[in-house]
Length: 272
Picture (cartoon, rainbow, N blue to C red):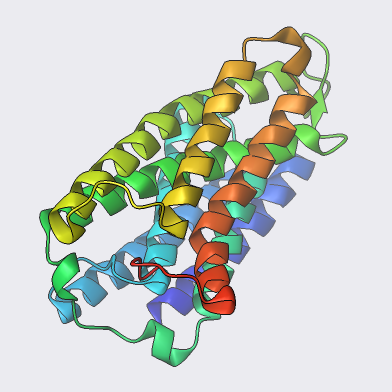
């Protein structure tokens, strides 16, 4: 019930942000932000309720991770909106959250059911590893929304100042880069703590598990972006394209790898 309401409020927020971008009216901006905050509150309430019912942190399957993923994107976006004092990116960023939320709400009842905590998951490294990864993914989701905004024609001004309600492309890019700079250390911490947890649970730090390999691919992709960022020839739309593709790599690591493991029948110790 709460997740359904949160999903509906997320749609309302996106529509309000788009309307605000077109009209520039103050009340539409407040409506958009208010809808986003309400959606975030509903997701938070649902996660807390689920955690209390299960007796453990709601981080143990793809459905719960997807809900936390949405939560992380929205939280990071609201922090960006507060510091940037600009709402034009809201619709684009929340499209990333909506994509993940749609995945969550379309899961089967069996996948949404609360499960018992497996012995390997009964570790404080669960919270540290998963929450670190979530914060990194959330920041990358915000960066991808800003990158998409930069790529869509008519959403940014190429000059030194904005034209009407168009925002300066350089401002979008700087905010996108700040989101990347926030997300990369958290993803790095997530991989490092995952290795420590693997050593405690399975007796090895790294085993070239499909999930581990794609986590490394994701990390290397964003490392590449951070190295290309200072090069003038890679700035602008090229960099924005890499950031959007990077979020696709994140989604494949989250959703595609488990599907690939099931389809090709690869060996994997990771539940999701």
